[in-house]
Length: 381
Ligand SMILES: Nc1ncnc2c1ncn2[C@@H]1O[C@H](COP(=O)(O)OP(=O)(O)OP(=O)(O)O)[C@@H](O)[C@H]1O
Image: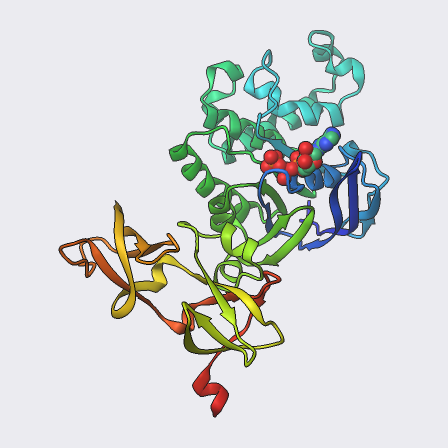
């Protein structure tokens, strides 16, 4: 099956008085790996369930390829869904679990019955189903597990069986709802790589729901970051990291979290931090309270920087994260990332001065939207 586009237009959904989806427009390209990401309760699973047809939207349309499927039954949308819980049949072998969607599609009722089925079903069809199962098992590297039951598998193996079961259907798109969240940290990291490889090999459309920004950042072609039933920003992982459109996106993307400092945009558009003009101006009409965001890797020790006290130092592989509290009344903490093994410029009393590059700051106005920043020299020129 050719990978298909999925087009979501004006989707709205409420549960009682709760407006859970507030008009979602999103076009997912054929063969794209798109992640729906956001805080718990932002509506991502509801949106995925509406795409699958497991939930009905109050308004809006869903199309797969050129076909409007809004009123079509889930079974006829030709989508494969992979859940966090795997949803395997415990009494069936891996082989039978994977074969089930094909049997449902290709065999008449009597041919699906355990004993009678072998007599009634066409040998040719059974051979084809078996070949598809073997092929999917091969892709997911679980061929040696085909005769086991789910209880005899590890979490990662169960997830692979669930993926193989989705694979045999040759769906128009794969829908995945937090498929890795039951796995331990190491296996999750491994399965992230496997899912990416699987996507590359299949060239299929993947729509992937997660609240884990690292999963979204490492696997996706594009991310739709949702907040309170809306898409806050749609873009590549790089775009969301380098140019977050709102404070919500800036806070959500990146580990450690972006450093945030209260600032101001004065009447002449100058950006003022701790009562000092930074030599930067905000483009546009935003004035008054603002927030400056600085990533940990854009902070460094600087002799004329902001005085701070080191609270904690943590080394993670090649990186060291230094948490510092500003020496003022604000009790603001900043995290600086540097190479492990470098000197941090901390004096004998645990004090440090922190600087940052003016070109690397992110500025958000009082409406929490990103403001374009210009250096003053550029403004004067
Ligand atoms: N069947 C339902 N009946 C009532 N409210 C529901 C129902 N399903 C979801 N909700 C509510 O809709 C909101 C969005 O839920 P949804 O599961 O889509 O969020 P989510 O972003 O996927 O969250 P999580 O990451 O925790 O799964 C939540 O407030 C949830 O309580």
